[in-house]
Image (cartoon, rainbow, N blue to C red; front, side, top):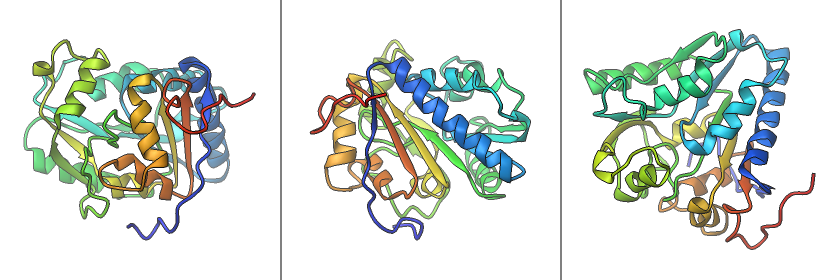
Length: 260
């Protein structure tokens, strides 16, 4: 395991009654963290996930007051290969619509899926390595993936960014999320940040709404930590916060909504 990850933490997820409540509570916590960091350091570097599961949180975060976005540098954690550059399903396009084009970020670094893939991978890894990553805003896939690290993931991956092939369950999720009409339309390859690269961040805020994610949530919290459920490794991160709704939490042993 990464030297940053020493022992398993006790995870007490926030369980919201609705997806909208989940997004608002998570956004409030992220915004508070950003204000605190900006009060004591010159800038903040964030890695964003792109998925419908993040929409409520990103929408609320974009409206949060008192954040100097010009001092924030943004990255994203994965991108399809093989789509048209103008395709709305591109994760860069999703994030531009959801938050990047709505706020005056100091810098936004997008994964380039065109041209020489290995050169683009190396360039992005080098940009990420220029300074520590403060926050990761992520979700969990229906097969337990983090970014596009499908099971069995590599917890000791020596790379920071790499090209991967997407498994069938991962591709089906994109159809179930209504991002694509047919599984045949979903790309089979992508560029992703690796699990060690994500876990090297100082804080992780993870939003996971919906019944589609209930098995993955249960496995990530209650099954043994295993590469067969990549998200289970988050239990070893020292500053991990998890936000669920009643649907995604429905298969946990303790799944009552969090009291306000």
